Image (cartoon, rainbow, N blue to C red; front, side):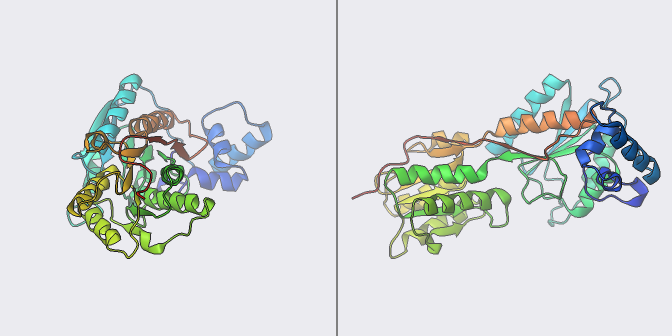
Amino acid sequence: MVRTGSASVAAGPTLAVVAREAGVSVPTASKVVNGREDVAPETRRRVTEALDRLGYVRRPRFDAAKSSGLVDLVVHSLETSWSGAVLHGVEAAAHDAGLEVVVSAGLTRNRAGRPDRGWMDKLTARGSSGVLFNLAELTSSQYSWLDQHRIPYVLIDPVLEPPPGVVSVGAANWQGGVTATEHLLALGHERIAVVAGHQRKMCSSARVAGYRSALAAAGIRQRPEYVRHAGFDESAAHRRTLELLDLPEPPTAVFVCSDHMALGVYEALAERGLRVPEDISVVGFDDLPEARWTTPALTTVRQPLSEMAATALRLLVRMMEGDRPESTRTELSTRLVERASTAPPPH
């Protein structure tokens, strides 16, 4: 079993239902299903009886010889260096596992932005052994469909908080926000603004929360007018930066929640004749190739995109083998990469 969310009666009960019936945790129930020996006899008896009573259908253990040898990677877009880093990590881990990867872009929703069932049909037609979703916004019906067909899946950097029991891999976004802000504070900045992504997206809200925590810890008053949301769009980041510069007391530093948006920030600063970092410091987030190409090179928080993707693939293989991870959320650490875009505030 892959996920502990709800499933239709026709597909049988989920492992979470079995665990509740037996009065045990989901990992314990998973151990019984997968024939693990580290379970007390009485616990094993209760789980086994619950499995039989509820009609739970065991998923056959993954056999590489009988498998299609395919896993699907569904990404939001193939036009960004972000997606390239994710694809690199997945391909390397898949090669080590003896699997091939089928890559699809933007198939979870149609052109009108509504949920699309077409990719589901293609998935079953190919007989893929599992799916990785990167930056995907799945609907409750799509989660249910995956559960009903007992298809293993892992989310890479989910956009929204996934349902309970869904396995996901991401970065330590909150700590990254803290690190970026602390770097600017250490340089002597107090008027620090943030250009964030979408308010409702997990990664963006966590980075802003880290920014606020760092300011609070330093005893710096948080200014609501210094928090601007640009939806991870370069043009919107350009506009939000101009708004910040028009404030009666503009910031001396800006924490930008993506390297892509930092390009728009740079452009707005250049329009106003401001120099980076002599007049204003800028810190990004991601450490994409663009961060090294800008002038000056961008100080940024590195999130290990390829490592996140490789970790997700390895977790997926474990799930294909019937071994459910004990933790549903895996976070990889972030770190600051110092370049030339930050300096002490101007006198």
